[in-house]
Image (cartoon, rainbow, N blue to C red; front, side):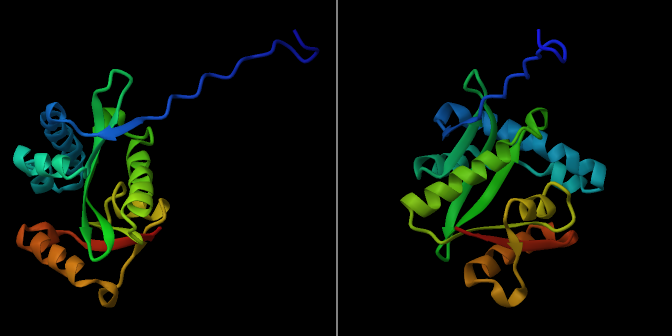
Length: 185
């Protein structure tokens, strides 16, 4: 015992998430993560987002086969979050990053984005990360801004980002304000 009282041991730091390539067996779990991650949108009056179908297994498998599907796995090696990405106009474009609500606020999304930034710069020679997202959803644009992304003005959109925005509008996502964002690597 010290003169000031008992010495307390701080709680152990949580282990960093294990980021790995998705496997074929993971793909149905990724769909379940997507469904669960959509539910919080319901509370914001965005039920169509909550009700949207997750990416098809064939689409997810295409990302997996291309090496562009990563998961953040728990201690039992079960995916708790995932990220899929494309190359769009010289940038790694985050097509989707989703975290199961039970695993929210544990840094899994940030870990996946950080991992992608490293892969994009070191292995792919890309200059930036890009994404499109809802402007006013707290866990969308405001979150990404805290992780180093900035909102792009209309004049900064590349042709690939314009195409993505047209596809999103055709899918009905423009019912709520959306933005494209970029993070330099």
